[in-house]
Amino acid sequence: MKWMMLLLLLAVGAASAACPDYFNVEQRELNSTQRHNLCQLTEGKVVLVVNTASYCGYRGQFADLERLYQSYKDKGLIVLGFPSNDFWQESADEGKTASVCRRDYGVTFPMFNRIAVRGSDASPIYRGLAAAAGGDAPGWNFHKYLIGRDGRLLGSYGANQEPGEEPLLGELKQALER
Image (cartoon, rainbow, N blue to C red; front, side):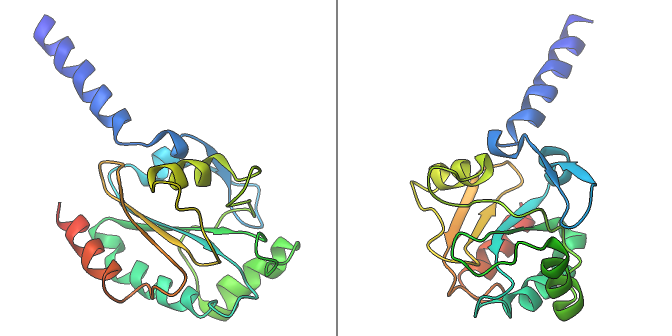
């Protein structure tokens, strides 16, 4: 009986260790009142976190991110989009942001309310990601962080990194195989 209790405690500890502290938050869906605990949403998945901006020259990556999501979601990928106005290219109107993402680019992956991604007012999510990446905070919109099923950061990629191209794609595929 004692060994069963010990195994249960170890399993619970391992499961909670897979969720980084910065994901242990609730986040509101874009243009909605629905909230999600990011630990529960990402549990056991490979996660690609992206700071987005509806009026950025890189906004075409919305379609690329959606294709990536559709191609690999059944294998355990989840893409999380976080609109940000840190680079002055996002609307204050969540309805407009949602329209650009969903209507213009067909985004179905989870998009959340607008947050800060750099500086002293960065959200805990992005403070944690930057710390895990050795201080590599987003330098522009569409910065990508790849997180493994075990909750560890696997890579940090700037805006020029296309979602469906190397090296991100290869590292994503490797992470999905683990």
